[in-house]
Every structure is written in C-alpha cells, then in structure tokens.
Length: 138
Length: 286
Image (cartoon, rainbow over all chains, first blue to last red; front, side, top):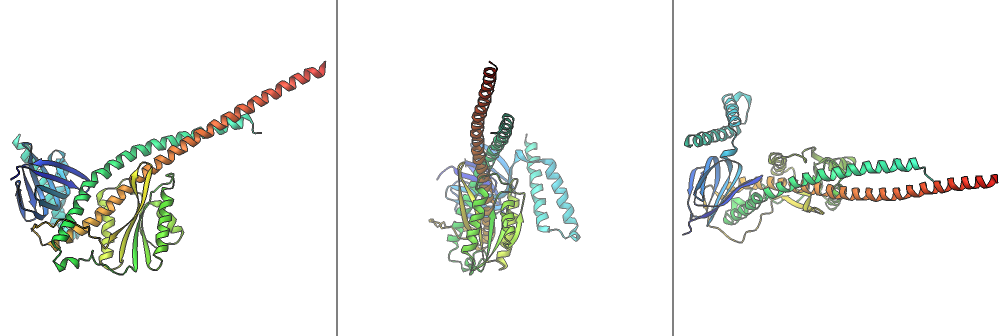
C-alpha cells in the first residue's frame, strides 16, 4: 500500500496546494472525511468548514466552502468554491461577516436569501474557529 | 517647400506621440504579465473540473436521469445566444475588429436562427448597436478588473435563460491568448454542455447520487468556461495592445528619422541659397 497520496486543492482562481500528503481531514457535505493513502475512489460534495492535511510532517489548516472532493487511487482533489489558508484569514473581516450574516438571519422579513446568509455565517464561523485554535496551540 | 519651423514642429509632435505609444506599451506589458499569471493560476481548477465532470458522466452513464439534465438538453437552435468578448478600449491593433468581423460572420452563418448578443466589452457593444443587432445584455468596464464572481453572474443569467427554454444554444466568441504576438479567434459552444469524454471509468463511491452531483457540476462548468474565456481575452487584449504599440513606436522612430533628414536638407538648401544671393549680389556691384 502506498504511504502517500497526491493532494490537490484548487479554487477557480488559483491552486492552493499540490503536495504529496499522508493524511487529510475534509469537510464533506455529509460530515467529515478522514482520508489516508489507499482510500477507495469517492466523489462527494464539499461542505463548509475547516480542512487540514499533513504533508512532510507538517499539518496545515484551511477553510474551504462548497465544491467537490474526488478521491481516485492515489490522488485526492479538492475543488473548492472558496478556500483560504489559515494564515490568510482576516479575523476582523470574518467577525464582521459573521455579524452581518447573523443579523440577516434574525430578520427574515428583509427577504434575504437565507441559504446564502447561512452559508456566509458558517464560513465566517469556520474561519474564526481555525484562527482561535491555531492561536491556542501556540 | 515647408519651412524649417514647420518641420521642427512636426518632429516634436511625432516625438510626443512616440512617447505616448512607448508608455502604453510598457503599461500593456505590465498588465499582460498579471493577466498571464491569472490565466495560469486558473488552469488547474478548470482542468480538474473537466476531468471530474467526465468521470461523473461516465460513471453515471447508465442513469437515465442524467441525460435529462436541463443543461444537457439538445434543442433545435432557433434562438442562439452569442457571448462576445471584446476590449473596452481600442488602440490594440486588429484585436477588436477581428472579433467584430468574426461575430458578423457568425450572424451570417446562423442567419436562419435568431441570434442575440451578450456583449462583454464596449467595442463589441458599440459595433453591434450601430448595426442594430439584438443585444440581450452588456457588461462594460469589467474586462479590466473582474473576479470569478463576475463571470459567475454572467454565466448564471445565461444558464437561467437556457434552462427556461428562452434560448437553445450558447456560444462564446473570444480571442484566445496563444503568445504575445499571436491571438486565436475562438468560437466555443457552452450550452448545451458538450460532455467531455473520459477514457477511464472509475468505480466511485458516490456520497450524493450522480445526477445530483452533475446538477451542481454542470452550472459550475459553464461558469468556468466563461471565466476562462474572460481571462484569455484579457491577456490577449494586453498582448495585442503591446504589439500594436511597439509597432507604433518604431513607426514613429522611422517618421522622425525621415523628417530630420528632410529638415537638414531644407536647411542646407536655404544656406546654399543665401550664399548664392550674397555672392551674386557682390558680383553685381563690381
């Protein structure tokens, strides 16, 4: 059994990672997927949340939102609609986004797209969580 | 014969023009580099998405619900939507006129159907508005600075029109960026989605049923096609402008050289004439 798999993470605008990884935690729409080398071929929709992977002994964290994940043989592809590295997260912006989304959700009379607001809220929450955890770990 | 002063004035004016074209060339070069980076950055996702779509289509081949997806429905193309990508500005050589000519040819070839234009870029819109063509939508001023979300919005509107049966086919017409000196006019069909072929059939575990996955993959695929066309067109525009401005700068240099030579001849001639006048005047006095 191979002990590595090729992990590719991309958004429409850029490629975030193309590395040989040893494991990955991916937030699929129906719950987290833990992927190790030799996983069976799989296709799933991607949810919103934190994903992490370990490559060359280092674990990296990202926040992804929407898209698909495909596992084929020794390759894992994450096609995310949005994705950002933990270092790139702007905490102030995430907090503002969370506040805005919560406000929108609490006032359904405004005729807002509640699915969109919910998504925005989840994304903001995931960003803040990742930041908090990484700070705590240091 | 023009006077010396006139010639000097003309040389100065050509020099000014040359400075402008040189500056425009540099600006285009800088913008081209950035545009090229974006094209390259967007490639992996587009490639992977295409492959994934092909794999899903093959894996779900037996499922008859898949073939009934609205974005795959092939209808007789009575009403065609042409998305025409041009630049907002000129001074880019034949960049815009090639596109407009190709679009006109497209209209002639599809004269039996009703073609509506979605114009991205001012030059295409102006050209066809003057000719009274049917324009369903225009997007001006975004070709300089656009994000994926802009492309998705344009694609979304087209997808909606297609799904509702308002239009029967959608084509993109744009300049593909080949190299700095070459652009390639490209017409590509976006809807109905031509399903890419896949050689390998992967036996997936599907977390969601294939037709549901396809239902989200297909619109994304259309968005990506539009996004990619916009990126290519943007890079091609800057490349075309750079080449055009480079040619203009060297033309200006040629003109300056010729004018300078002429000016020197004129000056020499007037000096000679003055000497003759002085000499013959002196001779007449003797």
